[in-house]
Image (cartoon, rainbow, N blue to C red):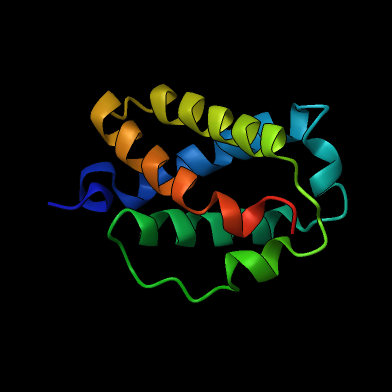
Length: 115
């Protein structure tokens, strides 16, 4: 059974909703999102997180393209990861699954940071 099947799309949607609620309240991270269409971002994040956990194919832009020009600092990337962990825990995702998801997140850091 994939992580996607264990968590379920509904819970992934809820996690992403909580994740963005937290990120948008973070004074260090909000500037990256101030001009963004949050509805679209949430939709893409659900698709991406679903794909990364074994769900349907992701059809969005590449991570490099999506983050191009944002000049995201490593410390901010890590804060985003921390908000994701809190959201996953809030929806009772197991520590083992959170660790697997965070391995995926860390594996794409170079595609996001300083682009």
